[in-house]
Image 1: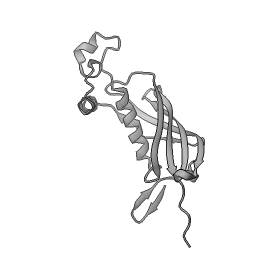
Image 2: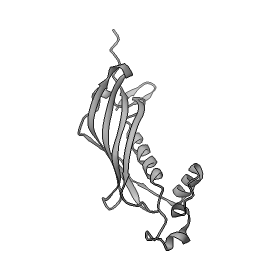
Image 3: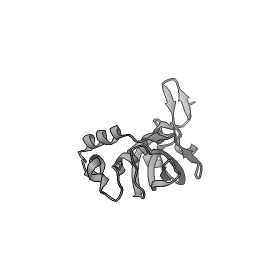
Image 4: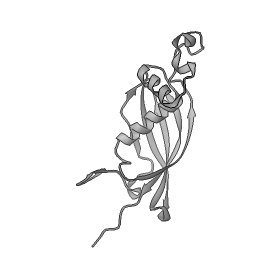
Length: 158
């Protein structure tokens, strides 16, 4: 990460390394997270919001929204700083939701760049990465790929 007079600056496309993993800190999912996400999205599915209903469900308890889990993962990645003012666009995402996330689970994310493709006409390049969201037991709850358009390093001015 770089710093300028006006604040931090993330990695330019040229600085992103294929194969180098980035790992976030953990974040514990709370009941409040689920309630607020349901209110924000309007997704009041009883799997997320009805503790009595879920007692008789095979999972036995409420589960976090899959999109809540994914949203937190993206936020965790952003907090690492590598995208700070150098990500031009979020271009694509494909995820598999493998395991439920329960209230009290602590999640962290692992991002590994698998491919880079220069896109000069777009001002940078496409970075393709594998994303894994991992719980406190080391189990992958979600995994997939994402594509980011990262800015190229500006030409040096003379």
